Image 1 (cartoon, rainbow, N blue to C red):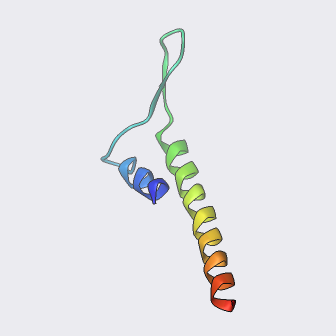
Image 2: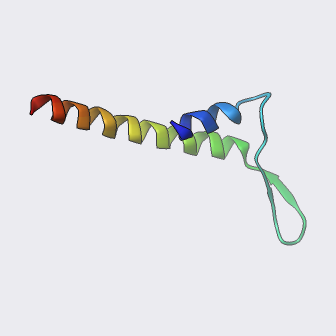
Length: 58
């Protein structure tokens, strides 16, 4: 799943997500990216699980 892959990629020691503003200032948004991707993965995992149960029921 792409969200899990990205969350792993941005973990400490990995890639940093740096936001560059129009005025040239930068902000490290790595923690926010990780949090967002983990939340996305959890939502999709719940959806997949619900669909699997629904399909198994019939």
